[in-house]
Every structure is written in structure tokens, then in C-alpha cells.
Length: 74
Image (cartoon, rainbow, N blue to C red; front, side, top):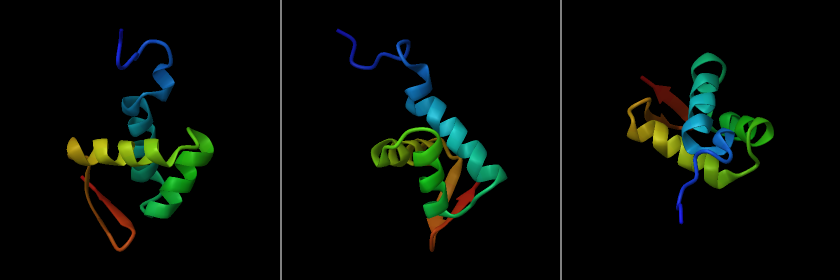
């Protein structure tokens, strides 16, 4: 039994979604709420996956902090 199956739906993995979210944050938007709305409308309508993606970006050092709703990147 596989706990995480990366092959069946690779476009739904946290790694892929985090990369798309990071690209959007770096090029277009630094506002947390706008990034959340964009993520839910374009990629996956899931707050949980948005927060997991944000956590992943923080853990790998791409997001430094969120201060007053503004995302500060590397």
C-alpha cells in the first residue's frame, strides 16, 4: 500500500502546486489573501493544500515570513 502516490496525479502534488504558487507570488502578487484566492481558483479549491504549499515553501526557504498579510520571499 502506498501512502503518497505521486504518479497517479502529479499535478495535484504539494511540490507541483507549491512551484506554481511560488511563481505566482514572485511575479505577480505578494498579498497573502490574493494568493490564496488565486490558488483556489486556478489550481485546487482547497484551503488545506494552499496552506500545505505555503508551509512547504517556508520549510525550503522560499518564503521568509508573512508580515501584515504581505508575503516576503527569498
